[in-house]
Image (cartoon, rainbow, N blue to C red):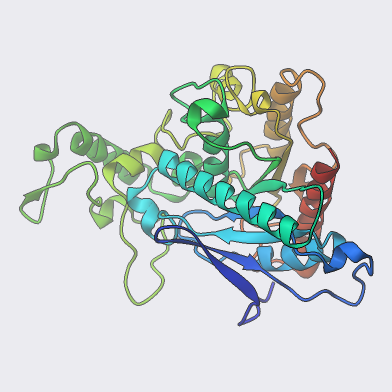
Length: 359
């Protein structure tokens, strides 16, 4: 779907050296004429992008912002920039990302209160919904459950404020994606080398200097997985981040289709998973997601996750059945998809957000 060259909005400095862009589209002629449409938004959908993403690199949030404003003008879509945005992910990690998201949540909670006071509202709605795309789904999940390899009992233990809902869009497995896109021998070599670097930097030498676990991997190790667009090739991941992304049991390995039952329970169910956080969930996969291997039965995997949530949430219906599922014709980020496909995905998110506001 075509992206306009300019976008009306507000740039927020939500933390030192970190910014977020709030979309402020004009109301369409079909917007509600009620008094609520004249009040400033006090509910926020925080969009978290994936690897290499930055502000406006994924197009559908702009369209979502318009649809959401027309459906409920008290909602606003905000694209959150993290230290890991663009190429920063190569040396970052999910825990750091989640802590920065917590800063954004706190900031927009304060904005919600300020706007409600300015509008002289007696009641503050103040819903914050996380919308994770691609690796943003790992960030949103880690925000709620912590590191998958270190169980925590509550958000209080993590020092992160609660949110009203979570949308996980395109929660693909980087491990399975690497297996599908990279030569198997090169992938194994890259993992073996990364493990050596992490264990003993002196064992691996590049440019006559030892590599540390936070240094970028040599480029040939990851050839075939990352696009080389632009005037300069992108930096390569550090050994630690590479192992987190492409090895079984890595911190990023949250959504692989072959995860054992105990890990699925850790991510989704009773072992400190998403279902224990009392937060409504909308999970969306694209029918044509190019980063999900064709061998993966999407409906079966989603059903497995839903079953784990439903078995744990005590009948609260945290898994949003109405809108979760496989979006027909949708690719990974929908940038080249038709308007009908973008409308389908965006409409699901809008309906989910409105249902959350009614809870």
